[in-house]
Length: 207
Image 1 (cartoon, rainbow, N blue to C red):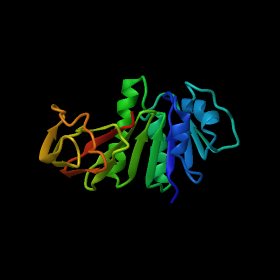
Image 2: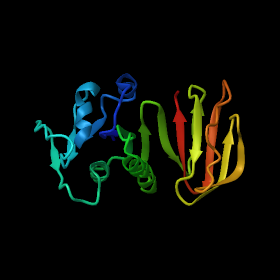
Image 3: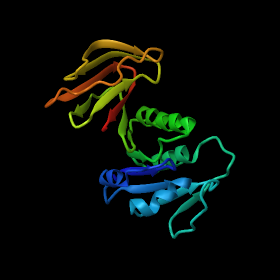
C-alpha cells in the first residue's frame, strides 16, 4: 500500500529537504491552505480537502472534498481520517508545525490517533522529525544533532535510552516533568529508545 502524505498550511522554508523525503508513489492529500505548497513541492495531488476559508478552491481536475467551515475536525484531521477509511497504514505529515500553537499541538496529537489504530505516522518540518514510540523500539543515528523524548499522554514507564549521552534505564516520565530533552547520540553509534508501558513523542532535530 502506498504511503499517504498529508500537506498542511504551516510554513515550509526548506522545500529541498522536504522534497527529498517524498517518494514518487506517495498518495498526496493537500489540506486547504496547504495548497500554497503545491507549486514548490512539484507533486501531483491525489486528493484535496478543505473548507477553503484560508485558500481558494483551485478547481483542479483532482478529487476535491469541500467541507463546511463550522465543524469539529480541522481540515487536516478530516484528511487523515479520510485516508484511514481508504485503507492507508503509513502517514507522513508535512506543513503541520508552525506559528499556530493550537494547530501544532492538535496535529501532533494525530500521531497518537494513528498509533492507537496500529498505523505508522511521522511528522517532518524544516528542522525536525517526530514519531510516537510505544510498543516498538525507535532508532536514532548520529546524523541528528539532538533528540528528545517527551511524554504527552499519561505516564511513560520502562523508558530506556541506549547509546546516547544521557542514557536511561527503566525510567518513568510524566507529563508534568519532561527531563528527557536535548539528548545526543554517541558518535558512530545508533541510539535506541524503548517504552515498555505508555507512549512518548520522539523528536529528532537535524540542526
